[in-house]
Image (cartoon, rainbow, N blue to C red):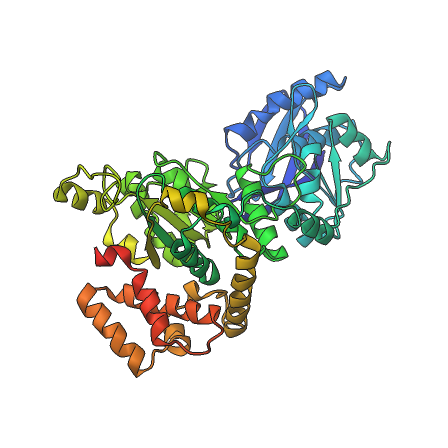
Length: 509
């Protein structure tokens, strides 16, 4: 007898429906086909132990289990549950009439309990697209999968519960999540960080506001204790709120990576990822024997903060160059490739020299000119060209620190940022995949950020004196366009160009 159940294979963010076919004839062999990895093949032992624990026998005979399409790689333990149900149906233990419109995913523990799996949200989206009536997931994944409407999602705890559901012995209520209500309720939760806590540093907060308004990459240069990390961690509080579409896209990435907490349905705050400088290039951009999203993809629609940028390995920094430009990363293997999105704001900080005190009025720098130059050369020119804004931070004096009134709150800054982003959304309404000034192509720069004769003269002088690259020229125009948007100006003026040139700190060095 041949029985079929249905599940899904997740490769990156791509999900493919998989048919589990089980045939049982006379004999004593167990064969597995369908290009499953070790975790899939080891599922036989987990299934046998789980069935024994709930008082059922593993079917006897010549058993062939096939995962179709057979040429697609299947990875992970989420195939345990559909294979177990297919084995029971093929062996005559349960009826198979109700299995044709149900998708099943879940790992089995030896005691028959269902363990959480990765990628429940993209699997649910695929189940709805394939017009399945219901999706069965482990209890811990139910709210994540139930975000998808027009699909009955059942979050169950044990294999016995699944058997009772598919045979109709017991009625279970599907999990219901009001996606929009859930999204807005979670988004209203206040964050603890606020720019009102930052005393002084008005020039740096201005640079951060410009970066947030245009989605620009940013580098802060200053001595230890000047507040670089403090201000970077507050950047998400002035970014525009996530839209529902961005929230779903971000949640899918975290779901595939297994970074979504139990009983969490949606990510409603922009991600802020701050990897340590010892991170490897694979962990940063993604990959591995079973390709997983890296930190740049986990920061999609949010902020990637690299503190002490020169301390990162040279290879890790260089692999950032193309993803920062293309806003997606392709991980290629011999037989397949996987794409992950990584549209993010790249924010970094660094000291001006190895000891950290070059240019500090209160500390003496102990570094030689050669040491300072070698330290800065750890960041390549092409990577620096991809950073639109480079600003210097000077420590706030104790007197000013103790007397300064609270700074401008994040909510006020965010209002200006949201207004500037609204202007950009209207400007790029006809452009596919472009949402902010930092994403403009060269042709768009010519259309939307063309300098007049006075601005062009100022820009030519800056380019010649600072010896800026062609990419830096484009970056200056993008930043100037953002500064004009913050002021509500339809055209770029010389003050906008001057401020944008002032944000090329390392070029001046």
